[in-house]
Length: 317
Image (cartoon, rainbow, N blue to C red; front, side, top):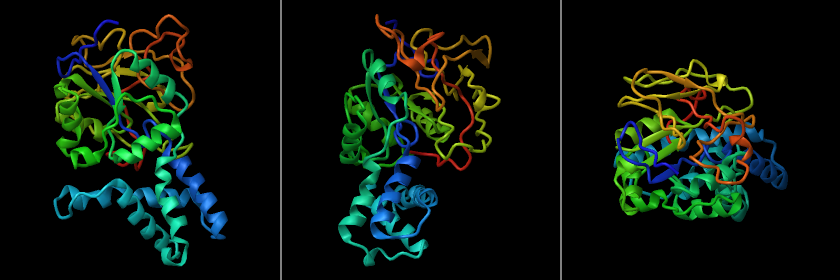
């Protein structure tokens, strides 16, 4: 494999770390399924999909107190439990009236989420060439159990409890690089959320965008992506075009075969590989001697883009 040098950092990428919720695993369908089973056991009338969205909507606000310094760091497991109790109350359900072990089991259901169809194969291919692992707000125990459940072949798992920080705090991005003995510019964050990528870029990391348009349902309405100077942007994520940006604010195309386009154009379009209906992971240089995984067939180029997030998408995972 030819080393991939990030055009934004100027460094050879030695580790590719992934946002998890929404990028690697499908939290919406997984949580809705857990809520459905919980409601059936407890004879509760609740819309599982609506409850999943309500529960998730408390995710970012619950971390704001910690990011601001008004609250000491607690794990995402703790926040998930607190947010679950609040969500039950909003639906007119008292957590105190339910069996404690059932509530706790539901709170831990964020550990048991299905991967997107291309996640396991895509990570396995990249693992041949670079260090792979999560860069998530999840705590280490949560991420380890998620990996075992979903079959995610990580090399290393460093949760937010290691950095004692939640994204977009620079410590959340820079601590994994330091513990791996790498410079921030030698680490790439792959995520489906542009705000996460922008914070990683500002912390010195290389960035790769992967679209997950079904994160919030089968028919999401796209919202405009934030425009930073030099950021290339797809006209619409449903076009599934791959884009490279070569300036400071790039959300680059992590093509380990070719690297990104040269600086002759701010927007260089390449046709991505055919992929399953729900997105695709960036692919490294060689799918080795064997047949490439299904999402890398055809041209073999990575189905990535610097594009638009799903409407209502929380900024940081």
